[in-house]
Image 1: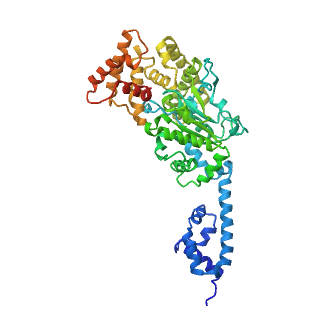
Image 2 (image 1 turned 180 degrees about the vertical axis):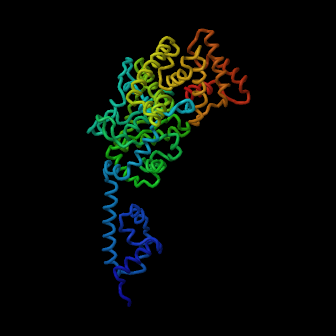
Image 3 (image 1 turned 90 degrees about the vertical axis):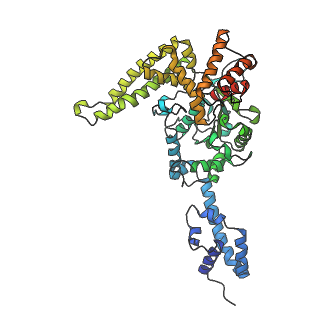
Length: 494
């Protein structure tokens, strides 16, 4: 009878059998600090182990037990260590790439559908804090006005104890819901963020991009989905991070998870996605924010979620936005190029940055005052400027034309184009009528008819016959009811 294999031979034989005879992997790999070790050992099947016992017999039990105990202890330490690694340690070690990728993604102001007219302005330079109604159900009409920082957990505060740990921010198109989530992402990836707030790891999930991955109320798990999405970020494909690590952060209340755009989920999947989001919010004691237009949010599908609404811009917010806008525009389009040019010219042409900044402040103040005067003196424009999207359109138009166009035709044309075509196209939520011209003409004729009757409000029943004739006139081959047409205008175009 042959002798038992030596310790070295045993290790080699075990390794080869467990890994299917591969010559690439050795026991050294299993016992190394390679991050893939856990995955490789956890991949060992019960079938392989049974084959091992059958091949070597009972004589191998003592050395095998000793070896497996050693490997198991090492793996246990590795798994526990990886999952328990603190947020600060992970960021310092490998997480910096993740935060840099998020920060780069959210760095600039993005207005979907307006990119051709929008210069690359830094979001932090033009963002105006939104006023939020934290109790919109108050029947007395008393607004409980707060900013987002009033609702988020404070420094050293346990997230689970926050009254607004689960928030649904609800607003019509153009009120800055997506911009708010991008701004928060930017703030929480920046070391110089507000000292009064808790340190949280930001996770931004765009629902229109991920909803098809959701299979049921609990699948996929939130940690698994986050890990998948992180791997899609630039330079994060090989990032050393596991779903277990994210789960640990979520369980410890160390994440700010933002689900953006529930209304952009396909209608036939929205209830399932809502149930999945609600499950994640209940399962993990971290900070959650959900955004949606009103029609996409069904309250009874969510438990313990605070509904927050965005309030119209007031005069101070309008003025602050316009002033910030012109400071950023003047720097980007006029003074930054001049400053850079002066630095490579003769010493006599050198500009100081301090003087340039002072000049920008003066010019921005004059430009903003000129625009604010026109807005205030024109009630229809003042009403339009109540949300960030529309005041951005007004500001871009003012910049191009020096003063606002006569009869405001150009502003309205831009707004129609953005709301009826450009934004729906970007978000893949297109209207049934394919052309902006037909949608616009139908709405214009409907508006004119109502104006001649002195009406500013109407029911579908009141305009049904008139609207049906218009739909047949402009798009006779497309079968769409007046009810469906108006519903799309309200929900998609806003």
